[in-house]
Length: 106
Image 1: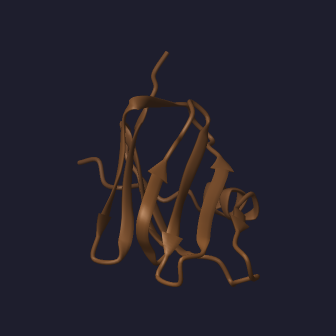
Image 2: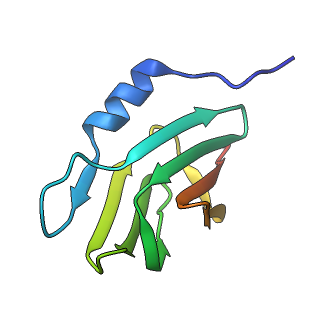
């Protein structure tokens, strides 16, 4: 059986590349990450309340929104593997953004 694999080296590299912008410095959003052979999964705690924009490119994760105080929160970083943008989604669920990215196979 193929379980979800956690590549901690990749997580550390990704975490180091996080770019967080807001009016006032914060500790950053909480983030959970996992992947399997076909997909990459992110759960991001950004306190999004409105204007959620998921704008990834083939090699970049990009998410922004307005938080409960009306401030813009954004998160972007380079992905280790290319994705299929049109088949990747992000939706708000219980105060978190749950994102599923389909890996691109060449």
